[in-house]
Length: 108
Image (cartoon, rainbow, N blue to C red; front, side, top):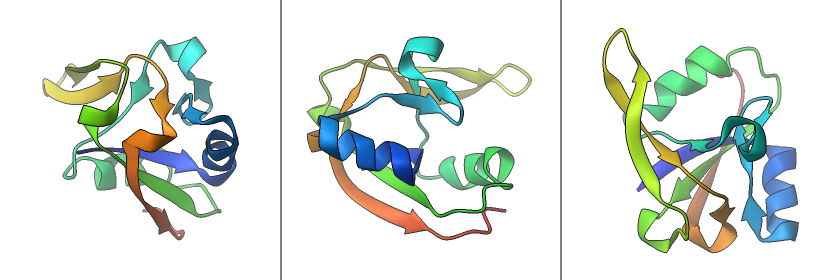
């Protein structure tokens, strides 16, 4: 299982389109080349580091890697520590999202 923090409007659009294509806050899959994801241990840190100033709820997507049509590659996300993060090299099909959790602010 991998996880992705989504803004509500982007997740609602994905439900209409059938695929999710937002890479990270303010960047699309087309712009970034992949969709940022995290492990169960990593997403809370990502939430506090990159979304602390977001005033609206976020949606945590629970993604089953085995249901994805796109490859997942674990790559170094922080060169200083060598920590790796899962990157999805293509859109996330709505059917690969096996659960969602609404996270109310604050996101610290």
